[in-house]
Image 1 (cartoon, one colour):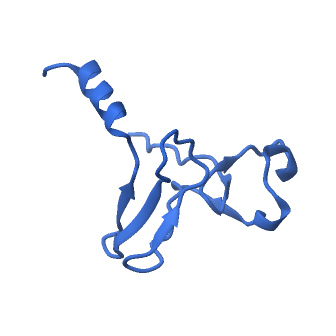
Image 2 (cartoon, helix red, strand yellow):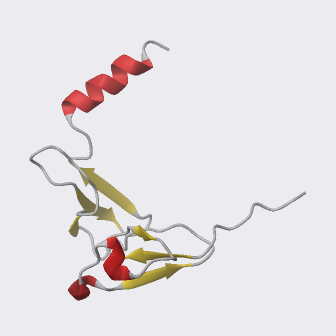
Image 3 (tube, rainbow, N blue to C red):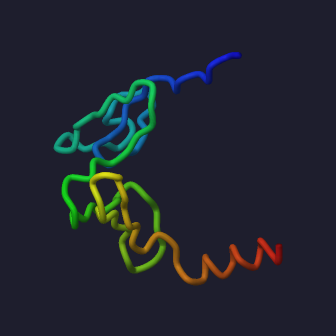
Length: 102
């Protein structure tokens, strides 16, 4: 039985955006004051929970609405987050319409 392959190592910005390995940070729009990198080997990126109640704005995501997307820590163990303003009501309605009845 073969074991699943671990993901390739990758660099991520502090906000969780995966960065291409063949380009320099300035080329991908990373300002010099935000040049903090995280190397993830053999796993998946996750935002640190910090503390219960901590809110992290997710600037690297495109969202057309007036609310910004926020990740709020609900629990450290197990790690549980609430994602505020993840999807707008019209987007949810469209997904339900597309999915149709079961």
